[in-house]
Length: 311
Image 1 (cartoon, one colour):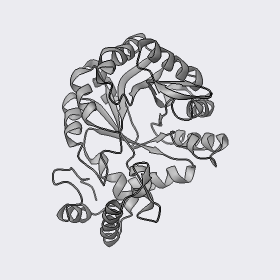
Image 2 (image 1 turned 45 degrees about the horizontal axis):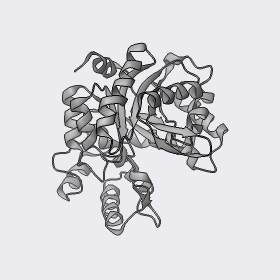
Image 3 (image 1 turned 135 degrees about the horizontal axis):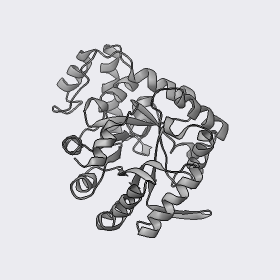
């Protein structure tokens, strides 16, 4: 475990952090609503925000920065990402060059109106393992040495590459989206490795793009598209067992992933105070141990998956 990883491990994270990636995708979300939501999160202990230049071509960072204006910088933790070049009117493109990473972080700091990022992730370097290891991570580590970022990580929708980064890069943390959830726990090797190496792990996409929040309703979304029949059937089974134990599907979806000790917090994309408040209520709702036992018996969660110990 390196010294910075030890420091990250000592940081105070909330059970749920706010992800801002969905704001630019929702036509009915206004900047005023985003500011109200950020202020609500700030009213809770250890507020943590996750954003990226790619989200709305900088709009997410701009709105978040406006909401954080005037707030003591030491009151919250802030994560953003680097690895995409964004220009108004042009599609974003991957840029893991040293200059690209430096420009990305500089742009984030300006849009957010802050002097440093607590965490800077290499943003989804899919298929660019060597460039990430040889250029992107060393550049972010240089910025860490300069104090412009406090910790370095990677954010991805797949876990095998994160295993490579854990083994070969000087990283402090990861953001894994949609790959360790109530529906999918194949990423256990990554979680165990993070625990062994003292790498803090944040989980996003724990609703698998929505179906674990909405249930198996018509048009339910799974991994960014309409859920296929076999996923709908599995979620119907999950809902039925949850109902027998008096537990909401949302509560089960939020409480299973952080049972693994490598997981520091969940990043929940929310567009309103009510959505975030609902997640806070669900993650703290009582869940009887019998629920997890039945899910395991029915092979709806992997046999080796750790489950919450408290009722």
